[in-house]
Image (cartoon, rainbow, N blue to C red; front, side, top):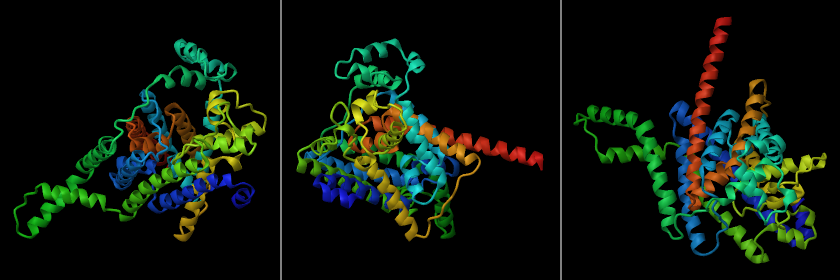
Length: 445
């Protein structure tokens, strides 16, 4: 299909760039088993920091590339509104990702492995968001009147598009918050990403790895007949051992970080080539104005992003069956609703699935796993919570955390903290549920 589109119009090369970067992300995510839900589960339930460390390494390398792009005016990154909504959304998202067994990016690559629960999770994310941003009525009454008044007084949005609870929440509260980047210089990467990431890794080592490492070190010293005294050198070796415990995950962390930076460079290059700032301008040139929002745009982040395009996918289906989803700010004003074969970010998500599928087939790890019983509930319910959390925070584990932190937006850490808190809560809930279930089974036995 892409080849036919490109043959029809050179502008479709824009979509090809997105899908190939999605394909690359999918291969790397699958090979490194990268998933922020797994990071929370492994760390809090088993005390294994492998995945959490890999994510922090990816952040550091992505930030280094991002600051070079910003310095050369080749970045497409833009900060998000800073506020407690990021923390709250992160908590909701964190609980959901643990219940579903995968974050937004993790669920996509696991679909490529044949995981049926992840399919349900993505369906929950997709339709949960699309319905969440479009419903109004009684839900509007749950909001502060000041938000509603401020939203209705907005002049840049057509009044007939301010209908849902999300419209009033967004216009009456979120857009009033400041977008902050800590620094426009090289210190941006150092202050907002590198130093905090290193401190988090040291904390992980101290609370989860140090005790075992020091015990092994003293045991080795005793065996050699030396004094059982440890110092800074031993601590540094312990941290290094933690970083290299899984070379596969660490390597993919480095590559994902670099690739995410190159992706931004490629999209900015495409925009410069065609003289645009949004793919909607190219769609308009091709006559596909029905795909566009009232602002003449479609969702085109210019970097790695997940959840908004999934909401568009669900919105596209809902519109086909007669649900008017364009009478709101999310679809009607901000993101548009392009046909799925002309949706740039959605092609990136498809690319992640296909890339993961290829890698899992190469590694002989592909296997259809149909969900049964509780897994159906966990998949749909967890996906629904992730979708709600993503809309509250205006992003998911990629768009609200990974991209923002590396780009210098301190709000990314707020979402990250919330996601960790929610993940911890999700793990504790699962432990309670498992213990309760086992106790009942033993009673029956």
